[in-house]
Image 1 (cartoon, rainbow, N blue to C red):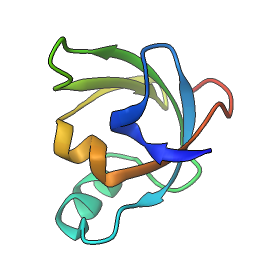
Image 2 (cartoon, helix red, strand yellow; image 1 turned 180 degrees about the horizontal axis):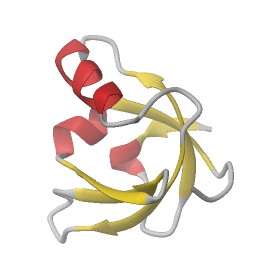
Image 3 (cartoon, rainbow, N blue to C red; image 1 turned 30 degrees about the vertical axis):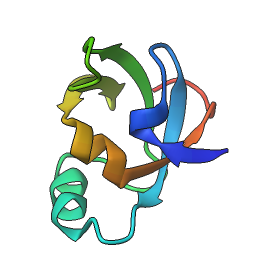
Image 4 (spheres, one colour; image 1 turned 90 degrees about the vertical axis):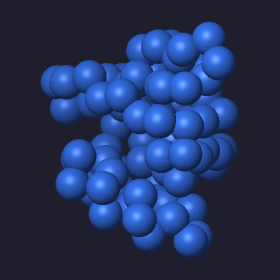
Length: 81
């Protein structure tokens, strides 16, 4: 099921599917941080107001702001990072 990273809960895992249309500014930044298509991750923490979101991928933790998390289209439940 495709959704955005922002809609996921702590403990859920997923795979990067792509980027939201119109998110070109965030797309380049997220690609540079290693969030390429097919990258698996686990949501580790979400701040009380939903900003920021911490994910675990490729052996490191990455913290993303709400807008960045909204730009990332993911598929839920495809294994652990």
